[in-house]
Length: 314
Ligand SMILES: Nc1nc2c(ncn2[C@@H]2O[C@H](COP(=O)(O)OP(=O)(O)O)[C@@H](O)[C@H]2O)c(=O)[nH]1
Ligand SMILES: [Mg+2]
Ligand SMILES: [Zn+2]
Image (tube, rainbow, N blue to C red; front, side):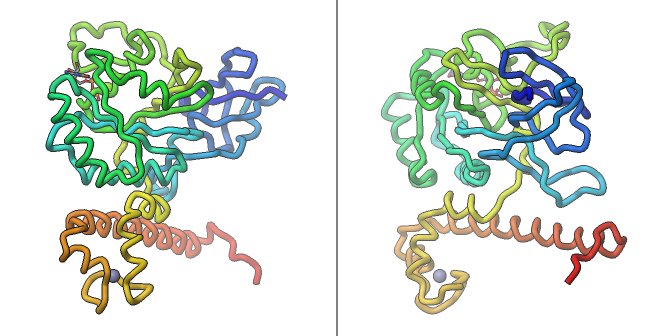
């Protein structure tokens, strides 16, 4: 039995790095596969035979016609998701919260990375870290500069040998520059590269699972950058653990923190210990999650009506 890991997907084909170091391209028809999957390949090296159980998976809502509202696996077996923001006083906290929910949801450990610290004084950078610690509760926050190299060792410390890491974050925050600094040469184009310098760059097909010098793997697949990733209750609970902890003290177990008597969450907002924007952001994510679930239920009903799904025997 040949086993390996999927490093790239192209319509019906998987590129698999076999455990002996060989790279093969095999068919993946009939199996749901994602970049990062550990798989068995048929002995004739024709197709993916089996996908090993995933220890984590980043998923998103499928945008394929006819499959809307279904879960699509974007990347799997990621240990650490680096959530990247450029350090400045105006870090988008709501975006950060959403990214943390997604990372927690996947089963990976999120680590917040504040880049470009060379643009601020150490004190100002530290102040940004402290303000974000209120949003990224219990999550490590590392300060780095790809320009001076400061803090890159902290990223390495979070990416020990055999782990798989991924970087998410808005365009322009410095992800590619950081990846290039980690790899030691240019594997990703940065905003610095002008259009007319790019000719011929796409002649070789890049892997989406890249070996880092320390023995870790960097997973970078296009779907990772999509914003319509899937959220679920677990991620929300972990990213908003402060709100959930306070809510333990509400009088009613099913308190919606709207106007119920003895609501500990509303009391915390009145007392100024919980920012109201944080509660609103959480509500927004919960509402999105519910609408996705409704969409899925609706889709299953429609399939039932069309007779696509056989009724379970009672
Ligand atoms: N001053 C400074 N600029 C940086 C740093 N990292 C990236 N940049 C710049 O930020 C811009 C966007 O970087 P890029 O890596 O392409 O961002 P990406 O879109 O997140 O991949 C480029 O002009 C980089 O040179 C840093 O640590 N310090
Ligand atoms: Mg980039
Ligand atoms: Zn309440």
